Image (cartoon, rainbow over all chains, first blue to last red; front, side):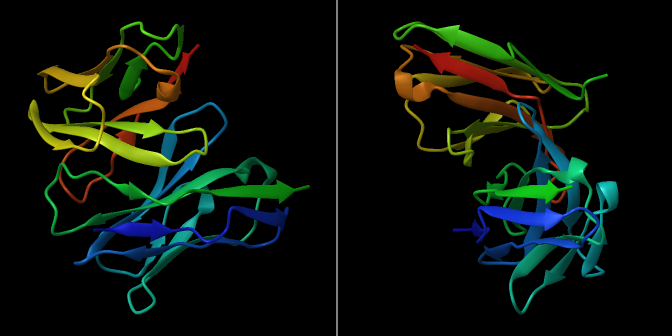
Length: 116
Length: 112
């Protein structure tokens, strides 16, 4: 079985400061890893993914994430936070060994609050 | 053009009623999903279809029945609605195991 842990319910960051949203995962094989963002009353928007290759993945809106196999982590980062980054962020995993239709397993989400 | 569209966006209905949520994707993907987001924002997969064939059917009451008339559509029918069915239901689609899953805007179901 696969699982995702997002240890922080909420992360507070001042505008202009760097931000990190933590994610660790557990899969039996090698993972595909994803980050999504959800704004109030909206659907999930894809930010970035790790499939293979470079451990540092760059995505939308200036976000990036680093895959660390030894620590089984995939933390989301941004060098300088904007108030508009305030939203609910989800980390998700899919086992490479699974078929294409097995979907994603999500973490419980982290509320990111950027203070002006 | 909206890639994954679902209707209705908001639905308020009484207990015991039967309702359907429709979903269509114009991305040419071969796999479609239904996810449920509960009041605590936790997301859980309900069903997945690959080329109109049911692949995943998680522990979901059999009052929930998905139907896929073709690769571009996956509808969700719910019989005998209960208060606990109140949630946001997301339709999604993807092509291949490592590719991105794209989500619709969600359908907010409230059972009263």
